[in-house]
Length: 128
Figure 1 (cartoon, rainbow, N blue to C red):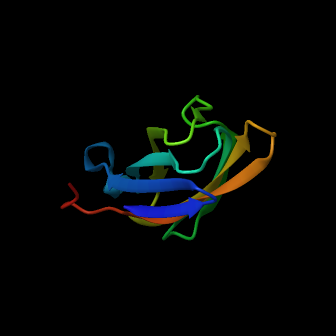
Figure 2: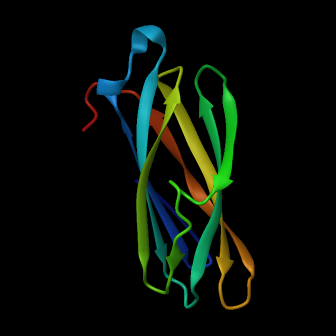
């Protein structure tokens, strides 16, 4: 697991290779990642947008941007936690992801760019 904290918003990420949905002979590797967002600040925030950078060992790079996460724009009061699971496909068995969440402080409308820590995507037959 990797962790980053931006002005009291903690983001933890765990990635897992999904061998049962992958086909290495056809250069198709599936990964899931679990993201946990913890509001350790004294303010209420709403997650508005996400932006991901996805890299793989075949030298591919793509940007993915959109509203919310998995169809939600959660509001986190101080001390609250939001967890979700998503996934990505790569054409090689190794890669990495990193990104940002745009969050709005509901008290005054101030926007905050929250760092999503870089994490590795590695296909292994021993992954648990």
